Image 1: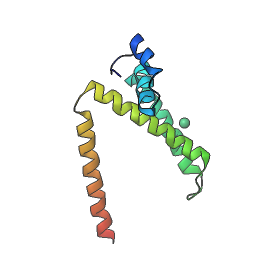
Image 2 (image 1 turned 120 degrees about the vertical axis):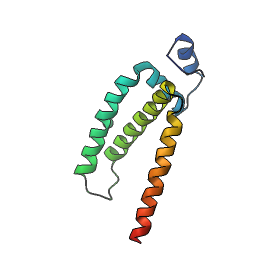
Image 3 (image 1 turned 90 degrees about the vertical axis):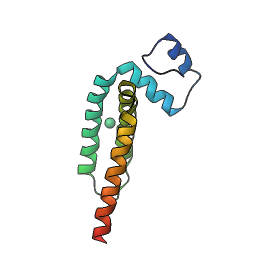
Length: 111
Ligand SMILES: [Mg+2]
């Protein structure tokens, strides 16, 4: 499957590719980065509301749904940002590694 702006051939390809990654890219290409950043904000607010209002340790359908919404939006943003700036994925990976290492250091200090 090609990447980039949605075009007729991409639409035709979509029918033959049915994995979640293809669906994420198809939707992201259709709406674009600005729209999906706004949608990410909406979904983050919805997830925050669920986390803030329900008792901990209870796995509800609403919590799972909102986590799925946020995950889908983050996947789209990562895809669209990588399209705009090729090194985005490496920068993101480097920052994730740094933050995980920093938090592990904090956990070890608490042990
Ligand atoms: Mg939602």
